[in-house]
Structures are given as structure tokens and as C-alpha cells.
Image (cartoon, rainbow, N blue to C red; front, side, top):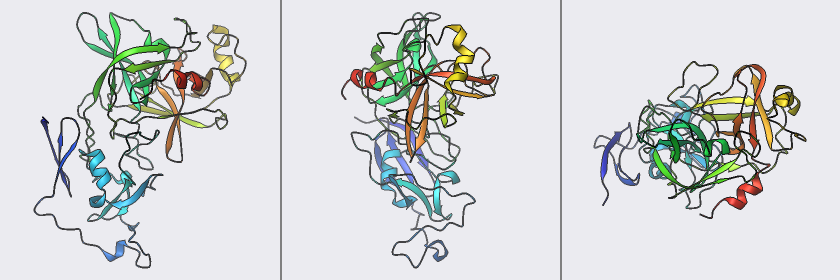
Length: 378
């Protein structure tokens, strides 16, 4: 039997009642609600289809592949999939329209059972808030005596039962904690559910127990070679606006020096003295292998690397970086509206955020075959 957990969101247009499992239960239209008036100034009369005007908002968002600019009240796919959300009030999520007829980037079709990777259901041209990186997960460690949880690492959702992370995270045993679970659907660690100031709420974040760990056979603890692992969950994930899989980069062909990539997680940033409760992100440039060697070659961490085509890649060096707590976090790019993971945070300098001091990432393309061969079928 379904049970309600008491979230009843009323936005300017709709109210939603949702179940504990996140299912869409009922759409309630307030008695005072009338079909929005169609202001002729917001539409192109010469077109066969009504098109939202572009004059109401200061900033307009272009819709990504797989979505269409649609009146909010007609976006049934978004109503069903997002359920507890309300987009009204966040201009970056709109593609046009006016106060009485806002338009949003609506998914062209509901989510398939076999979810396409690399998509975010919440996208705006400059939007980096709740739901923007739904593939980033927290790796949980449980204290053997108190049962308290700590989340010192991150990972990425690549399948319903598989999280990609660093081997040094998967095998960590610190302060009486042991690897236990993966937390998905998280954005702000200080609140649950996560809600934006617009009234948009994501489903509650969920801890999923880990069934077993697959560590690369050539990884040795205390070193960073083959620093890659798969966390296999006991139960499959339910995809939602806050939980989606990321695609995996299978080639380095377009990963040239200077290309911008993003890393996201909940660790400490070099630009802040404390960890923030919200997911943090940083855009960094891919750097040359020579710069990596100049910083880490003498440490032995990059023992006998042949070239940048090897198992590592480096990014950063602009005087800001991610620091403690970002181990295992995904480094990713976005092209044509699709997110692809290119690296796994492995290690960096004690002088975190130093100018011309990049961090080192395990190359996803280098280990693409190993990931594929060791990922259990769904």
C-alpha cells in the first residue's frame, strides 16, 4: 500500500500529490485556475505553430536535444517524471513565454525503462543548481560501532546497479568506518528532500546498500596506478530528476589540451575554508602531460608513464581546484546536451589550488573496455 509523506506543492499553475516511492499520484488544479490567456504579443502569428515569445525574460534558455519548448501546463512528461517539482520562478529553466503562459524545455517523451545516459531533466543555459548533475553520487562509510555515516568520497551513476569511483575510495578503511552504501539523488546535504527557492523539490535522496566491489586487479593500495573500481548495488536505482546515469567517454580524440571539463561533488574547494552543504562544481581545463610530469614525476606517483594516452589525465592549474573529499568524483564534459565522464578524481597536490598545479584523474577512455567487461547486466 502506498503511503503519503506529506509533500503537497502548490505552484502558480499546479499542485502535486506524490507518494513515498516518488510515483505521480494525482494532479490537482486549483478551483481558481483558468486556462491561461493567450496574449497575442507572445506568439508568432505567421507560424503554423504557436511559439513562445522572447520578450518577457532577460535571459532565455535554448532547449537541449530531446526536449521541446512547451507550455508548462501542457508538459505532461515533466509532470509525470519530476512529480514534486515546480519550475515557476527560475528564469534559467524557461525557454520563453510570459508570466501567464511560461514555457519550459519539456522532454519529448517519458523516460524509457532503458534510460539514455548523460541527460539532465533540469537544464538551463547557465543553470547549475538542483538536478543539474543527477549522476553524481556520494560514497558512504558506516562506523562499525556507532553506525554513523561518513561520505568522504564520490562516484558516478553509470547503470542502475553500478557506481564508478576510485579504487582508493572503495578500499578505504579509516577511523573505524567501512564501505557500506551509495547515496543518490543528493544535492544539499543539510536538507531532505532538496528544494530550490522556486518551490521545485526533488525526490528524497536514498541510500543503496553495496552488494560487492570490483577493483581493478592491478591496483595496489597506497599507490594510484589503476585507481578505478565499480560499486555494485544490491538493488537497482529508480531514475528520477535527481538520479540519472552518465555516459562514458570511450575515446580521447576530442580531449585536447585546453578543453574545459567539470568536476562535481561535496568536498572542500580551494576557494573556501569549509565544505559547503550543496554540491560544488568547478570548471577546469585539460592540461598537458608535461605539466603533470613537472609536478608529480619526482614523487613516483606517475611511475613510467608513456604518454597522455596512458591511464591518467590532468586538469586544473588555474589557481583554484577541488581538494579533500572529491576522491572518486567524476570529471565530465557536455556536448550536444549529453554529459560524458572522462575522468575519475585520483589525487592532487598538497598545495591544492596552486597556480600551474593540476590534479590527476584516472582516464575513463583508457579503462572503457575494463568497465564494460565488469559491469553486470541490468
